[in-house]
Length: 142
Image (cartoon, rainbow, N blue to C red):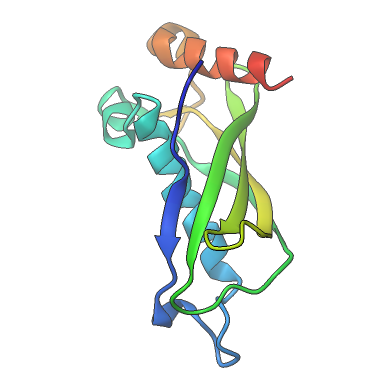
């Protein structure tokens, strides 16, 4: 069984708006921070993935905002691979406040694997260890 720590983020002042709450655009940034941390904890640092000649662009992003987050609060972001079909994959995120463990937001990002020339690539051939990891994760999450 894989043990992974959640990603933590302390809200910075510049991330808030005139109402004193985190501006909605920052949640997508936090998703990226959490996704990169997730890959690194899983043994696939993004820099290593790029060194293999692979790119992972964002195809879509969505976020459902439930409770406001304010300056100075620490959030915990739970991240997991939700779907994978060999080329495209979906990552799910849930953002909780560290203090009360209340759900503040949840969302998804969709990605694909590309070669450096921006053409789709079969990671089953180019990165079989990454392919096996993603397949295992999605089979486990069904």
